[in-house]
Length: 135
Image (cartoon, rainbow, N blue to C red; front, side, top):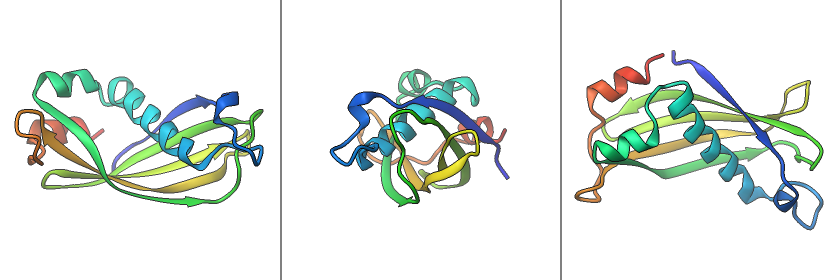
């Protein structure tokens, strides 16, 4: 089992839609922000390091279940956990929770595919990178 990491997100006024809650597309922004933060802070492998090694991650599949709205004045935390690695892919579970009672606003999974910057094609995740994610 892999560790669960957290990133606090500030809901901004431009995140709010005409229904007076966070627009559904912003949830993906929140997950991206959290993964970028957690790569550096928790896994100790920043996105810049991946690029320097000639790799990048792309989201190849996303599943989101929206449970409850997020409002402007609420605090939000994004929790993520690597579920598994397979070839060029890493499956990551996520939960976007709100407020002091940590109610789940959304949850799901994202399949990230490692790509070679040189070829633009998927490439098997090197063992040393998998090892760094096993925290």
